[in-house]
Length: 116
Length: 110
Image (cartoon, rainbow over all chains, first blue to last red; front, side, top):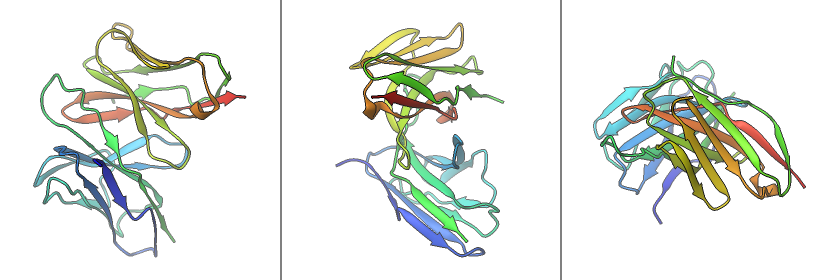
């Protein structure tokens, strides 16, 4: 089955620790994204990548880092510099390129991170 | 600041009726628009996409786009309790980026 997987589903960490969230896709999509969702809030873009070995900051990149060494994988590290890391983290992917593309994004199941 | 605006709701609709969800966007060059359904505690699920003016129908769902008025809507016919969820409207503004609204909570009354 083609799709996007995120692991783990729930993650608990102590304040001051870095944590890496996994995102893998087998849809052969070029573009991948990380969003953060807080209760009652919309999706806020953290980072996105349109091609391997390249990525761009989104609206709230401070305190986060990413890598894109493989087309299928786009891990997100939440560093100790992120002031309010507790949130629901969503990874998405889409095809890329071409003005006629609808650029539909498809989401993984999400990782709920709790930092205490 | 490019934005997508939605009424947060909740929008309460009797079972079997038509639910109408609305969205406005600020960026005139937006080309593609999307509706996602998100159940509580789950990730968003794409249910409709549209890029041409007019209506697009898929089963019980109809997406409507009016680029002149910068307005997108989603109609759900024969509403079912399983349609109760938050509906996110989104637009593609440039490159591969999509901007999401904060969502409208829909409650179907049995």
